[in-house]
Image (cartoon, rainbow, N blue to C red; front, top):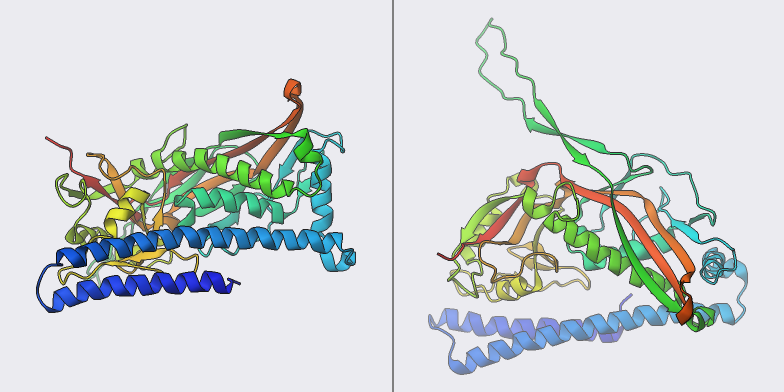
Amino acid sequence: MASEVAKTLRDRRMNAWNEAKALLDRSTEENRALTAEEEGKWSALNSEIDKIDERLKAVLDAESRAKDTDEVYNRLAGRPAEQRGAIDQVQAELREWMTGGKGNTVMDVNRQVKGSVNPKYLNSPEFRVLLSNNTSSASGTVPIDFYDQLIAYLIEVSGLLQTGPSVLNTAGGETIQIPVVSSHLTGTVANQGAAIPSADPAFAQKTLSAVKFGALTQLSRELIDDTAVDLLGYLAMSAGRAIGNAFGTSLVNGTNGVSGGLLAGATVAVTGSAATGVAGAPTYNNLVDMEYSIIAPYRQSRSCYWLAADKTIGALRKIVDANSRPIWEPSAVLGAPDLLLGKPLVADPFMPALGATGRQVLAFGDFSQYFVRLVGGLRFERSDDFAFGSDLVTFRCLLRGDGNFGDTTSVKLYSVKPTA
């Protein structure tokens, strides 16, 4: 539950936004443009909102760390084992593995079928297990809590994974096929007594393979031996973010052998002018055209999002409708995305930045039709020899995965018109 400090910051954010909105409403009612003084105040209020967002994130991160510290103190205070739960044993086993006490160098971190991803991500991917994974490495399968930490950090750095794609978990890395309908049944008029014309739907297949992504992180022996250090949290954060950066950019841009990247699979619905707005930012009319380029079932889906880079989102916040009212709406729920034309707006650092002419800088649609394939869990390998001369212990994290569209019409793109 958020603290009073976080709630106060949220209220300050809403007050600043309401004050900024009042400036625009006043100028609209009086049928005039903003004065120089009002323009300065508008910019200052938006700058204040950005600063509050940064402070709010820092407060929430600090509170999360404090909660973890409290749990450590509870254990040190000697509370009964039944009150501490099974997680204590898991952490002890993982620490023993990290220090080399088990004698094993490999650890597989797998997802349990009945688990769920960290609940703080309100729109976490939906996991579908195609093949149960009952195998384990020399050090066993680690329970879902540590897996959730890893996946949470991976989702944190990838906006695409926050939009609710369909995630498929498989035990093996063999190529799998996703059946998709390329044409549907069509109805027709049937005359009385005449045969009803028949037409079968046409099916196609999309492929998902298993691309390997890896990352190395190194810890000093002193840091590992210090029992007060949250090694699990550090390992989850460093590995999750590193893998998330590599996997996230591949899913968006279709690089590194990914079967179907977002930008390559989706089609351009609107092409804007490079001379409009801030270095080619879409206009209000462009965004409306984008929204209604998606059919109603996809547009009304819970996984319908806007996806853009931070620079693009900064420009979108400045767009107003025909009545000079901003179309960007701040979220009223902590941790939930802000809204654009009533749909959640998510930042993805791997989308092309605004200002790159001829590039697709904004995506909109139902991202549940994008399939992300994960093979097993994440594999950690420890080496005491890789950096032996520096007395560092090296950890390697490996993830096998892929991504591809089921229906490419579910997501459309906005492209900035190339310069002549």
